[in-house]
Image (cartoon, rainbow, N blue to C red; front, side, top):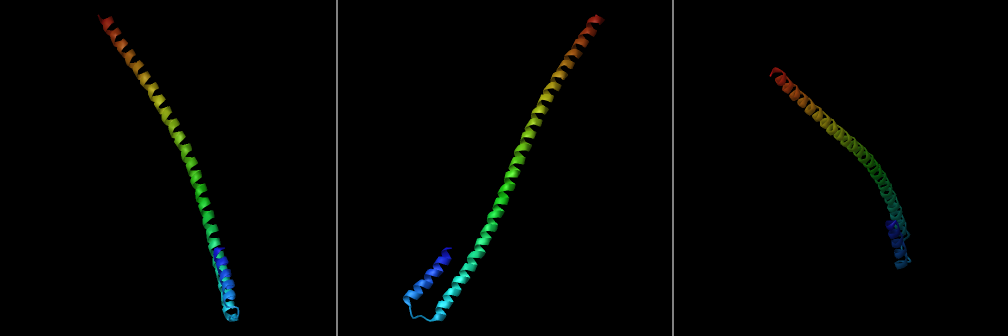
Length: 112
């Protein structure tokens, strides 16, 4: 848009400075305006594509972040469950050790 305005201002300036200018020069300036408009369209299209690609990447990153948070929560749940099971098994092993000790004491008491 700025280039387009610049090109138009050049034509107006040229015509103001050179009112009896060569029509070929004016035609050349008009062609420059058309070329600049084409370049603007190419750049505009490129920027639209880049914007869409950036949004797609942002959306994918958001999905991955959400999935990672879900996996992290599951990992923490599993870690908590494993810790609870370990504590339960340790408690059972302690009970078994106490029962074995009582049995050994009972054997020694009966033998005596």
